[in-house]
Length: 214
Ligand code: AMP
Image (tube, rainbow, N blue to C red):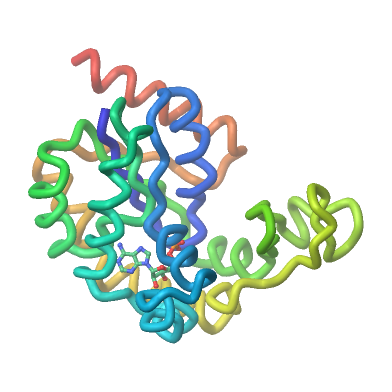
């Protein structure tokens, strides 16, 4: 099964992709994670993209595609995958067809912008184990310290309020047309991304189950 998750930054794509990947036994591919990994390892690509990533700009498509094509060839993708963060514009959506062939479904997680800004500017992450927290909704046991590995939590540079607002405008301009692109192809399913995490996952699984049966 090949799925795509679309949603503005902070809509919960990463969280839901992890749940779906487990439930459907398919790989989770986050292009944001692939790019952050290059940055953390300070590879040639990583050094090139650091400023773009930190400023909330889209990284050039050829760089993202290079990493994506490599990732899809890995063994755990044999049963299918769920793409989180790709495609980000119509150009990427067109290229994706060449990379993966036809997709089974595209799920759009819809969340209003004011909720996104509150969610993301309160987000804190652990650079050691990747665990995410929220200062209000999912705080660690000890303020500012990761429950799993005791690392000091950080706010990702691209999660600051100003950058989040910029990322939302990038989403509206570049990524929103991808929603209509997939709607026209009859592949789009939509969920409201403001409820509890497990309610949203259940809704997605039900919609996917119904869609695949038909
Ligand atoms: P994410 O973790 O999906 O929110 O992505 C974080 C950042 O990675 C984005 O703000 C972009 O700078 C970059 N990025 C992730 N996926 C893509 C993509 N498909 N095309 C271009 N840039 C991307």
